[in-house]
Image 1 (cartoon, rainbow, N blue to C red):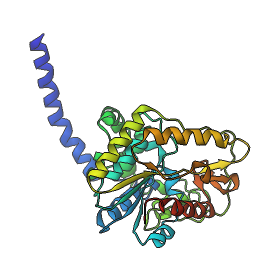
Image 2 (cartoon, one colour; image 1 turned 30 degrees about the vertical axis):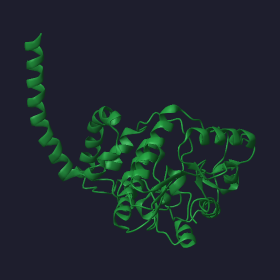
Image 3 (cartoon, rainbow, N blue to C red; image 1 turned 90 degrees about the horizontal axis):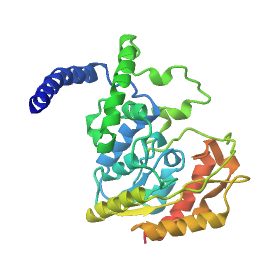
Image 4 (tube, rainbow, N blue to C red; image 1 turned 60 degrees about the vertical axis):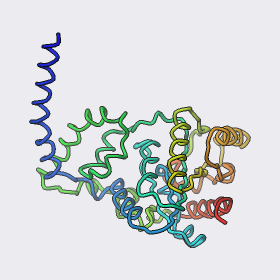
Length: 315
């Protein structure tokens, strides 16, 4: 049995020696292919986070963050540079939270804006993760070790797709394939401004609500957030949790239920919850194309509310 295991180990070692250079070569010459897409905005967000000096306000979360703020108003209100790190929900809460560990400065304020606190800490959409990470190796630390096996399983699909695009001469053109200027303009790298906000003008809300649910809480998410809070505190930074946009209409759960949820969250988190979730109720007409994406006016209203909430910690 020991001889068999030894032979298998040798075989896998030889296989790795052969495969790793091939994979590395593929990544070097045919990737990246998605640098014009929505998730490629992460490259610009990280660059801003790495290069801004002094204290910053850093907004963390999924697309409710990228579509939910006008950071210039926030920056003007407090005179502190703002970085909107909001990205795609398919990457999962844990992926977004790890962005908060990039180049932490003393005095930074990290605002967590999750719309649920009951995730399992994994990346939900592995293909999306590869489209996001590609061969930007400095970003690989955003994936958790529990995602490694899924990423490995998903790599062949990714490399096949980018290989086809490269072979067809469509380098970095996938974001423009079947592009509809009226509906897809908000999902490109060009749609983001220097702060990391989706700045594409969203005048009319078109999303139709059919149901809504209360956010849920589980032990795993709370533990992870408390560990993140401890890490940021050790760096001299502050972490808080703020509200997410909640459609206010026919299908909205009762305000009393949101108050109960908030109280439970406050009891379990080590950081401060600076928002009253009921202050983030917005009429359905302010939701653009998703239950988390606000129109331009909705984003302005939400930013104004966050400015008020931050007065609790910024003197």
